[in-house]
Structure formats: C-alpha cells, structure tokens
Image (cartoon, rainbow, N blue to C red):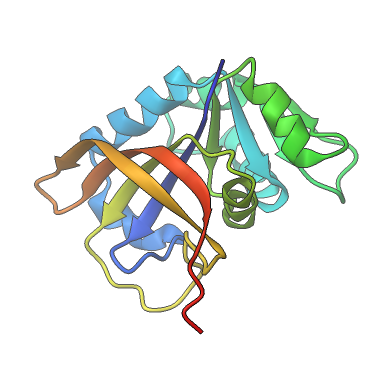
Length: 187
C-alpha cells in the first residue's frame, strides 16, 4: 500500500502561491529535502495547472544539474484534469472518478503532490492525504492562495520531524492521524 504525500513551500502566513519569495532562502539542506522526497516517490500526482507549468519548464530546465532534471523528467506523472486530453512529459490522465482513481494509484504507489493547490483541497476533502511535508519560510506574504483554504473538515496531524535551518526556514513532516472530521457548528 502506498501513500499520498503533499509537499509545499509555504510562507509563515500560509501562502503557497507564486513562491518567488523562497529564492533568497534556497540552500543545500532544502535541496536535499526535496531530492529525498522525490527519491521516495513512485510517481507525481498533479493538478492540471501545476502539470502545465512544470511541463513547460522542466524538460529543458536551466540551472538544474543533469541528475535532478532527469529525475524530474523521468518520474511518471498522473494528472487530475477534465480539460486536457493529450498529455506529454511522461504523464497519464486520471480517467473517470478522480478520487477513485487516486485510491487505485495509492494502493500500488507512493504518490508525491507538488503545488496543485486546488487539487490538494480536493484530496483533503476526500481523505486521500497521508502526509504533509512543508517548507515554511520566515516571510509574511500577506495575500495569495493559501495552502489550507477554509473547509468544512478538519484533520489531526502528528509531527514526525522538524528541522530549523540557520536561515529561519522550517522543514516540517506531518502524518495525517485522522481526516474528514466535520467541524462543529457554533452558529
């Protein structure tokens, strides 16, 4: 049995959108963290927008060493999309019921989700996330898409690992203990 791991760059105030604010903090420890999680994955699980953005950049990604670029290009990708019918870049469309498709993939593979904010919300609502790996940056962005949008469910997480880097970045690894618990109605 595999698992679904969500990995995200997040500001201290929870913003994940357009993470250009991460660049000044990039270092070898973060690179090793990202390489390790990609090495543990059997495939990437992506939403349509992230798939399109990655597929436009990674095949000829400048500035990446050949091993990292090859690893990212060679790993199988499964994409949740209703609008794209033809996929490239070693990608397969999840056909039919997406939640059911992810459950079937998860039964056989360790799946890594990068970016894909709307899709992460979908996975969360369907209790399909097993682990969150967050790289939390010491910046307050103020506005932008947040990783955890308001939802009608809550989750309980268990902190498996935490590293504080000398540049103030936190590497957090959480396992989902329980998910899809309805929030109490105090209205």
